Length: 359
Image (cartoon, rainbow, N blue to C red; front, side):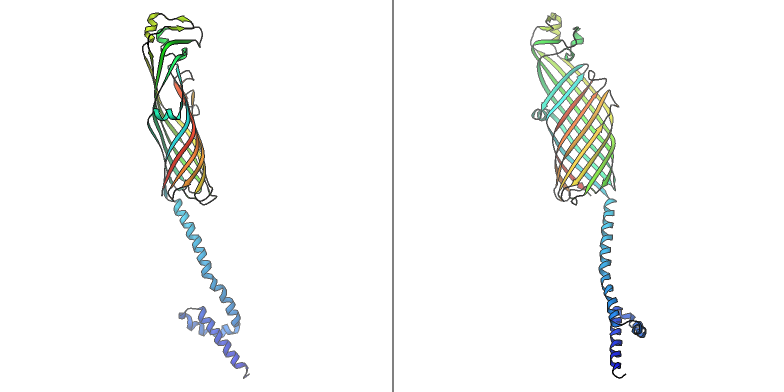
C-alpha cells in the first residue's frame, strides 16, 4: 500500500492538469470538484486521446466558414447588377444586295474597299443589362451608303422609264440598248434595332472565367427595321435607242435622255429569337457562338433576317476583352414578291469586337 500511494498521487495530479488545460480558467473550481469522478472513470491516456479530436475542431470550423463565405459571395454576385457594352466592326469582303423599286431592279456587289468609301454614317453598338439571371439586350446597327454604277444596257424590267414611255414588248426579258452611258446612283439607309429579354444559364459571363466553365443565354424579343432606298438614273449624250432591234421614235429618245428618280421606304417589326454560348478555354481565353433569326415571313411576302457568328475572345484585365470572329448577316424584305418593292443584302466576313463589363 505504501508503494502504491505515490502512483495514485501522480495519476491524480496528471488528471487535474489535463482538466485544467482542457477547460477555461473560470471553470477550474468545477474541474477540482469533479476530479474524483474523472479519476474513477478515465485514465490519463484516455484524457489525452479525447483531447486530440478537440484540438482539430478549430480547423474543421474554419473550412466550413470558408465554404459558407464562398457561397455567400456567389449569391451576392448573382443578386447584383451587371452591364455589358459591346462595340464591333464588321468587315465583309463582299456585300451583295438587290433592290427593287416600282418593278425596277438593281443588283450591286460591292467589295469592302467600295463599301468603306460609300459609307456616309455608321454606328454599331450593343448594351446588355443583367440582374441575377434575367436581363435585357438592346442593339443598334445604323448605316447610310451612297454608291454608283454605269451600264450600257439593261433589262426591260430594270428600265425606270418603261411605263412612262409606253414601250411594250411581247418578250418579258427584252432589253433596251443605249449607245450612250447610263449612270445609276443608289442612296440607302438602314437602321436595325434589337430589343430582347434574356435569360442566363450557367456561370456569369466575365472577361476572366474559371477554366471549363460555360454560360448560355436565351433571347426572345423584337427587331425593328427602318429602310429607305433612292435610285437616280441618268443618261448622258444623245443616242439612238432600240428595243429588240426596233428603233424608238425621236420623242421617246429625247424623253429617255432625261433623268429619272425612284424611291421607296418602309418601317416594320420582326419577332426575334436568339442564343449566345460561351466556353472558357482558359482563364483568359474563351470560345463563343451567337445565332439569331427574325421575321419568319410575318411582315411581308418575304421577310427574314438572321445572324450566325463564332469566334474567340481574350481578356484585357478583369473588365474588358477583345474578340475575333467570323460573322454572317442576311436580310430580305419584299412587299409582294421579288418583283415588287423591297431589297435584300447578304454579308459575311471578319468581325472585330471590344467588350466592357461594369459590375
